[in-house]
Length: 284
Image (cartoon, rainbow, N blue to C red; front, side, top):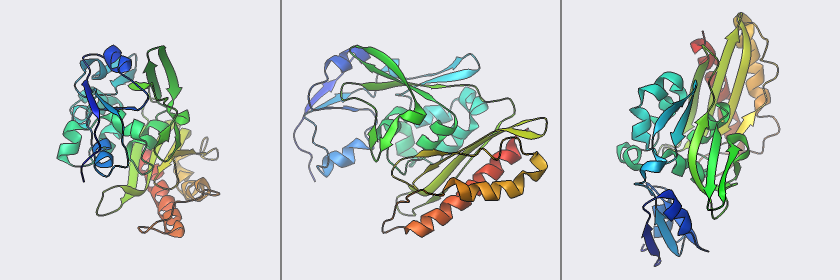
């Protein structure tokens, strides 16, 4: 199909992009999420503001022992960053499975997060890493924890006049292990269910254990795992099995032509067990 007519603005700076925002505007970077919606006329903005080339939105920089990632940084640039791979191997692990070569070359981390597809791989990673997102408008900037950013399917706390400009990552505990496990829909590659995990140890006991899901519900979410913290490493295996079941208790799972609710719950428990066990095995 052919998209409806729209105005096009190629912004020369973030300030110019924000100034160009009107009543019915959309930002476009890589375009892999937005362009299909335009072609199907599921989105019909009056103006597209192109920000994909802005150097202000790119880059991966150390921030103490943490990291700052420009929202316009492509998946390819993430994969090529030794700094990111050394400090946050979970992001590299997940990025390698996003889309195909063309998507990774042009698609941006900020665009994917702002799109908030409920089956996307990166949102649960941001949740377990306790990331913070910087949102900017003409009136200034504000910081929003990733854990408060996602509001529903394709819905976030971003206001129509705001742009996601930066992702800030706090340092992981020394020796923390991370892992991501997903079961994908074969044709699209999107996750039927995915689970991201972070596990840290202190004196042979779990001092941190975090787990987040994607694909299971209408929005990615962080599970509660209080019983794991304080567990001895040698006895954590049995506890992980119990916790994986409890992590999805009370969740209203998605159901569609690809998977029933019951099947998604089964996959979620399996993904949770494997992700937690994998993160534990990598923790030192």
